[in-house]
Length: 288
Image 1 (cartoon, rainbow, N blue to C red):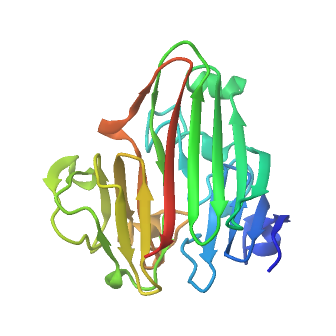
Image 2 (cartoon, rainbow, N blue to C red):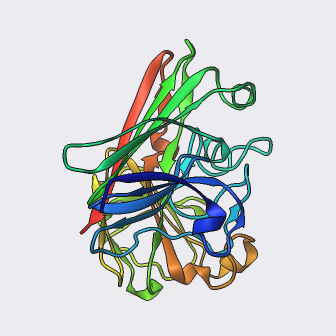
């Protein structure tokens, strides 16, 4: 397959999608991906001779400025609810990013650099001037790199999470390895503390924060296991279970088709980013 980066509209490539957003389709001899310029959000990744890794809600809204349910949204500069006046999961996921550069690596993988700079609105929400570069490399594996530049002399508090939605065939076949012995926080039980042992199974409404985890987890699923590796300190495991019927862009029964295994620096391991400095992180998805 020849190397290809093409621009497409979401209405032409996502069956039944509401709204219309500009997307980038990447296809090479190693794999393929679909990326939204809004939020620099990877929506799809499929290595050659492997199954699709990511899930997009059939009810996802592709209208500009609306959070897009599925794929790998970026939760920056805060995670989850912050306060009543600020967007949940930060603002970068609904901002329009710029394709700054692109190319082909020696291993025939394709890389893109997407960039977001501050505006009057973002400065009202968070700190001062900043620049974020999200580098996406599509090959046999998907490698994501973030460089978050605080261009203000003042320090800022930063949370940064890859909020990944993984496609699964059956929720009862899902197991997550790599969290054994990790202390966690259960958000569904008033942030009660616990220590997880063994393989994690999703058997009901789940919203768990693990502030410090090993670099690698493995998601077992019926379509083939996925290795999730990252430089970030923390992880989140989430599935809304039967609460999905109360969420407009999910819908009843959708919890059977995805699980969120997220990597990032958040909560107790949020970053105090000094003035005129940069925070760097990476995540890699590959067949296990």
